[in-house]
Image (tube, rainbow, N blue to C red; front, side, top):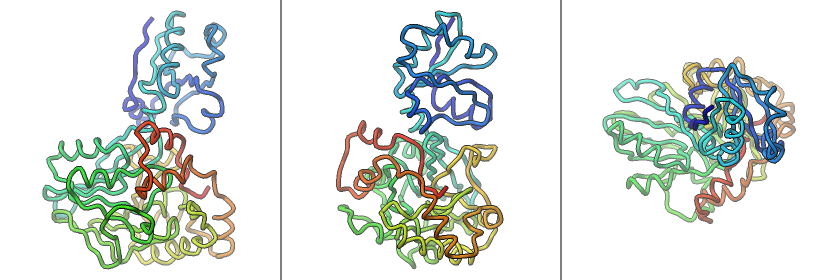
Amino acid sequence: MTVTAISAGDIAKKVISKQSFFILDVRNEDAFEDWKVEGENIQYLNIPYFDLLDGVEEVLDQIPTDKDVVVICAKEGSSIFVAEMLAEEGRNVHYLKGGMKAWSEHLEPVKMGDLKNGGAIYQFVRIGKGCLSYMIVSDGEAALIDATRMTDVFIDYANELGVTITNVLDTHLHADHISGGRKIAEAVNGTYWLPPKDATEVVFEYEPLEDGRTITVGNTKIDIQALYSPGHTIGSTSFIVDEAYLLSGDILFIDSIGRPDLAGLAEDWVGDLRETLYSRYRELTEDLIVLPAHFMIIEELNEDGSVAEKLGTLFAKNHGLNIEDEAEFREMVTGNLPPQPNAYQEIRRTNMGQIVPDDDTQREMEIGPNRCAVR
């Protein structure tokens, strides 16, 4: 029987289209429970690699023969070894090329819609990490928002579209993943924007995202003025694009709201979070399409793999937007904080430019699920 590699992109397409398949994950149990490939129609079996060194005969009856089987490990090597043993027992199997490292880094581009005066907006879904980035294209120019460290993906995509990246923006100083914004801006000789209240400790030059600034991309205006939106961080800034889309950063998600504690100031910032969600956002038109910087669970993906919902729908259905009592809101937020993201202090320092880890270290720093939301 055969062993074939399957890419993270192919797995992403299976997840988005809700295909049924089987995963044999041979990482240690704690790693599997913390973070895995998720999908609505996936069956799982987690057996650590070291428990299979003597053979796979005892687990064969737990592995189906009527659906695709994918063996997954951290980096690829162990999954190849186990897949080859399964093939020797007469099974056709795949292994995830590059392992969970590749799954963490894969970006799936989705076109969100056309803009009124020409151009379009694209969402890049980092499906294994829950990060969402955006490219706004208009009249031969492009702006990137909340770009991840896989910088070549964005630059190559802009080249495919035949546009020049002129502006790169971060909605806030990220703590769960390493931003690629500044690196991309340097590579394309563009302008890098960052909220100044989040940038008091950065060691590089940037253009401040402040009230009253309007950034123009081709024929499209990104209005900054009314959308200073603190709460996840003190500098968090939201953007309205084309009077149709609300890029909410890590303040508002589809099924949850942002956590205010990643700088150790939950009690100080929870009031800002409530003010943003319950006052500033309430002044906006409910027809805006909310495009967050993260998603929490795979069920938040739409049929096309995108993550988006009308603001009015979130006002009606998102529990974090429907707690009238302020004390109850404070308790809900500060009492339901998940574990801190892995290496989040080092990630913050990297995004400030204070440390410059090598590529392998950056990958290790980001390993694990997204943890930017209040549960």
